[in-house]
Length: 349
Image (cartoon, rainbow, N blue to C red; front, side):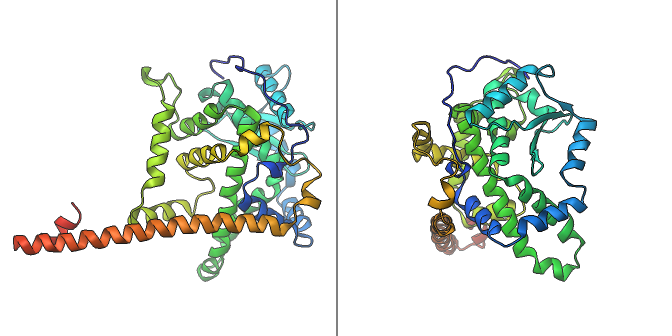
């Protein structure tokens, strides 16, 4: 890991914080609904057992990765301990580093989740950004995502691909729904990464480095966060009908949201005041979510989120349609005035 420097200020310990404090409403509602199904966890665990289970996956990394500890990458281990302390997690997950040239990290296991960082991430990130990444993965572990994400991977990568074409089409809505939850679980853990690091700038810089794959000193220049956030805003504000179609087509098959989208979503969460309220001590604590947070409330939050999202999308589509209609009228008018056949050229200029 390059350019390790002490954090500029101590982080506030979020005593007994519940994962519900940072979870995205669509993520939380989907998980609550899934957990409410009788026996679903037992079924998933049995399927995982047939696939080798948590023990087999852990053995694979024990055999072919570096386990971090007090004497093995000690500074990284210290960051991991500090991250766990900030989120008040006493059960320290095992941490591994695996040699991979592509930036990635993952949380595996069910009863004893463990975290794996790809070596490329250590080469790209400074200390503050590494805290964000460790907090993100710890967020997955604390939210109980590992079991469901593992099953999602199984169903998406193995289950549907082995089905006949017609059966695969029938299961397509299930695949789309699972991927939608998967993406929302990433937004939840992005918030956990911010809370663990308490570094808003580093949290957004992480997405910039994930997108560009460059160290700040690469090519003798500096990655500029303001420019990246302007790029994120530009992407969000692309409102043409064709842009909306492309965005949907690009996103529906992804397990992770686009990097600029994640940066923008995290910025919106900060701007909402939720981050500051949590640091001020106003957050749900462990043990409170069950009696105080029934499923219908999470479903209501999720419904409001999707209603707002649909309203925004529909507004953009209507604006795009109106813009397209105006362009068509203008194009045909110009063509009529010119007495030419250049209508299509005028339309798309």
